[in-house]
Image 1 (cartoon, rainbow, N blue to C red):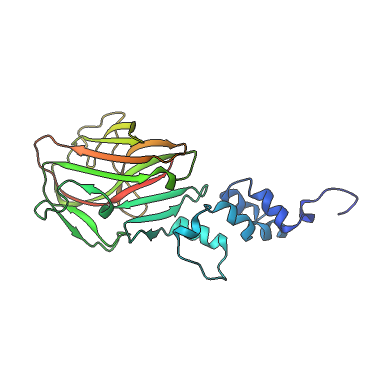
Image 2: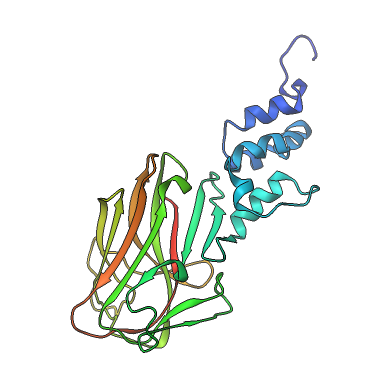
Amino acid sequence: MSSGTPNLDDLSNDCLALIISLTSPLDACRSSLVSKSFNSAAGSDVLWDKFLPADYQNLVPASPSSSSLKSLYLSLCDHPVLIEDGKKSFSLDKRNGKKCYMLASRNLAIAWGDTPHYWRWISIPDSRFPEVAELLDVYWFEITGRIDSCNLSLMTRYNAFLVFKLVANAEGFENKPIEATLRLGGTQVSKRIVYVMDSGDVVQNGNQHPKVRGDGWLEVELGEFFNGGGLEELEIHIFSHDGYSVGGLYVQGIDIRPC
């Protein structure tokens, strides 16, 4: 240290890592450009161990000993891993390290889902799961997903999305309102009307419409909730029954990620 002036570069690598850990993963990546000392601290396992969930070792396969925790963090952000026999995927929100899950269609309760006349199970190359549910034709459209809130990041606001594709012969979904309800610990926390197909003729304010995801699938927001802690079950319920049949839909799953 020259002339008694404090210099952050004189701090130990672990001390710098501790300081950077008080920011965010994105800020940590930016800090690597400040100086050589910051670059070293910003890539240290001491830092990235604080950004990873405390239980990450129980959720992801063991990494090679030469792999850094920063590399593991970035991999979990960009490449979700399958867990629970391929019935869920786990990833991290790159902005803050919060947990993200997708419930595969095999992990959902689908009304008439085991009746081949109404639904069938197929493999699609661009799905992250081995199978997706294909809706052939049904009058009673109902899907329910459940996950324990303790699996999610605490003190975090989440959104839930239906992830799907429409096939060329999709029918019956044009501006068809679908009721989406979220319950946490049995208490309703969100209820809204959503659509999986727009004809362009009707757009109702306050209702949710499908958007294209980065992976090419479609998604529609089903609701929002705050996970404040506790051992509560989150139930996501989608329902439509108006006497008219619908068909031509691939359901990959329900995505649950931070707002």
